[in-house]
Image 1: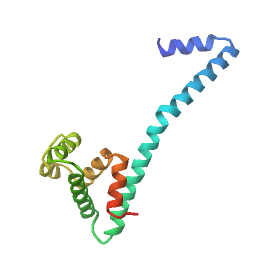
Image 2: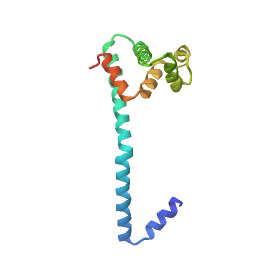
Image 3: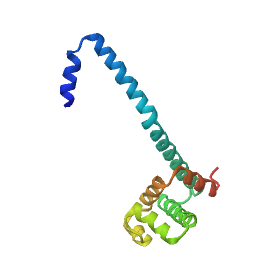
Image 4: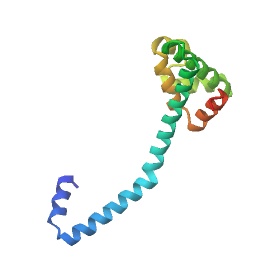
Length: 140
């Protein structure tokens, strides 16, 4: 059904039926949002907050260094940590290939800036792994 056509039909309905339809649509929209959209948004918000915490920790810890060097340190620590948690070299290559479409870390370092690499890796980590990385670096 065309959305404009549905809108015209809705406005041609009597006012009391419009109210019933509006309430029904509102209930379904709220329920859909609560069950499907809200958990996704909460998870994304928690991930972004954790990313900011990790980056701020590195900025505060190495505040005398330049931002570029701080991101290089964070990139190095992240890649080492991911290598440690992966069971094999193949699994690490699969993870890196999934994110950057390239298995070679040297190519990735040449092609992208460290800020991009750090943000891309952190966004692709699960929230639990970000918490483990944070605790490993004694961020708390």
